[in-house]
Length: 453
Image (cartoon, rainbow, N blue to C red):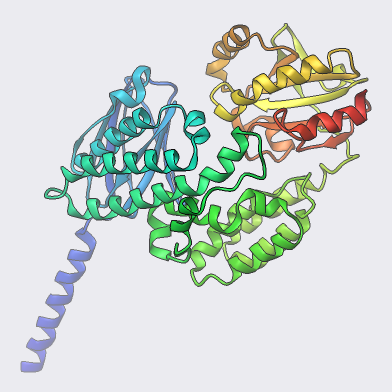
């Protein structure tokens, strides 16, 4: 009997523990109301997580999200950062007409998210124009970013007694964001002063020397850390110094202890898969060896198979798009001249920064055997915005509207992962480069001088 009672007691305890496990919240109740909604969808995304929300006609939405604690992106027309923690019941209010300024949260978890909304506005005000910031000298740049970090810590101070767990995480996040700004200075300053040989002073880069790039838990939580690790291990300039550096990058990723980070970096490395990059085969084989994520590997294989059809001399994929001047235009309509395509969108900052350079290139080759074709991937509901933008900016060349966002045929056919993207096609409709130099890159003029003059 005693043994039986003991079993009952143990069973009861196990049942209680089981109930506690089941009732312990593993999800976030996320709801909101959007004034002036832009479409019927919103998205919450993070590392290895993506969820589509339905936005009702009155702008309301509500859903249950099974997420780990951490930082996520909420997207609807624009994007904002949210901090989600299992057990939260969070309500968001925003107005797309005054997006960032209108964001307000109520409910469980509201304090942390209202801080993030204030933080964004504070950083935006203190940062000012990014071009001016990156044009600063080394000392001024570091001092400004220290000022920004300190201002954010002052905002965070208010939460110390109410949400110490978030304060701990956000303090680390601010540090990673600061390190990120230090990391991006050299390449960004070099770009804006048009000096690829620029080197930042030691006091800018020294804090990064002791950065731990193999912290699995931080990689799961902080997008700022994910970006920093990627930039530290495989920055663009290093990868472009093919072939020796590519082998070094692949070996460095292989040596990491965290499978999660190896998979994340392998996926990022796959993003460099481009028909104009000499190391296409090496990247593909490297990622296939490094990654244990079968879904990522399948997607990369599909992309690699598409890219193999985009090498120089291959027939350029066809299209049939709306022309700003009226009617529709196909690839066949443009045959007989070299074609320089600019794949862009009105919401794309880097695309817009290339416009003045593109105008100069168009002017230089106005009478040459080449046509300049801009293809917008703006969404269908931004059609009028696209037309207004062309008129206001007095854009030249042939202006086409793909009307498919990231599902446009020109995006899928040319394996495009990011814009702006530039493509050069010969008079016979064959690819010269499916990833041609940007207008701001002097290499474009060198290429076109050889071909069209």
